[in-house]
Length: 427
Image 1 (cartoon, rainbow, N blue to C red):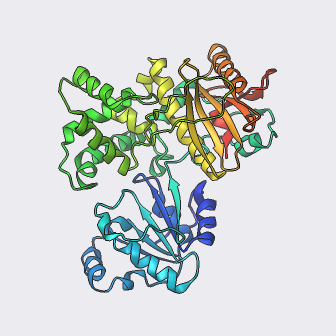
Image 2 (cartoon, one colour):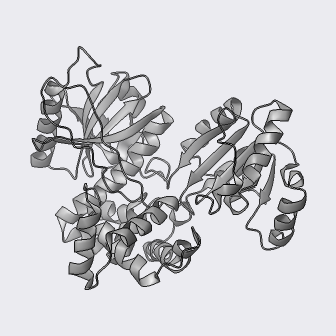
Image 3 (cartoon, helix red, strand yellow):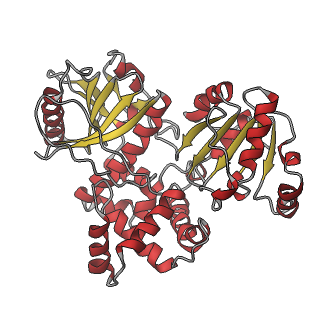
């Protein structure tokens, strides 16, 4: 039975509602267990669950003989884990064309279809996409939401008090992750669920995603390598060298590419693309993507570390926190019709996150654990990058922000840079 009373609201709720008004088919995609089905159920009028053991066999037969029966029902009709039957794509497109109405079908999927040869139509003009990720701190109620990202873009920043979480609490939030079923659980149970998630990836998901018999052991070792290089622009060759050095085994670049592609198809790894602004200088912009997990708990579980381990290594903690911060910034920015990028040039100047809206406005963000020294370093980088941007060819940044892991207050420095603890940020 669908629970619409105890549902914890998600940032993508409004995105889904808007897409249902704009497109005949809406596809919600994202990592397993991040809440796609539950969110879709809130707005669906009927549902078909393709992974329901009681109906799997008959659903498969109907897909071959009378697929339209699967699409019949009150609209919007939810088809959960649709990628198991990729021919549903063209059938839904045909149905939408003939009904001539928006908001007919909601597809949810935690992986890309294995056999895309059964999908002829691209979906152009009929399909709207919604990317869903694990819960941000605002959604899990670990952020008080005192600072609005939307307000920052409108130059309406106001000083505020944060939840003032401790460093130990931050470490726990990183290791717990944003999985809806982990929210409110005891620390022991929540951390166990993160380990279970990695076990499922290694034991089953990597073998099933494209029907390639990948090794469980190699998957675990590669996840460990990725966890050690998260938040960096790492090459396949570097991962291979790390694999050999730390895991005592050799692996080819081709195999690593195959495994990484599978992790991306499962929405486990989600790289951050480079930002390419107009600059006054002739600095060469690095175009490599930055490696991130969709949730930091996948990285900590892959390495077998917990909150107390992170407390002992602040440098490593900083990288794990960056992964969590990028997760939250992506959730918030996409709700404002924007995307997140990173910046790095050949002079070593970096910016951890550039929040770029479709209307051309953008904000620059440096991600730091906290403390005067790190905040000063982040603000310096932001001001240097701002001076390089050619504002005759593009907008000046709407804001410059140092996003911190800990801190009691959100405030604006005398140089204009905002300092905002992650525990008081919202869309």
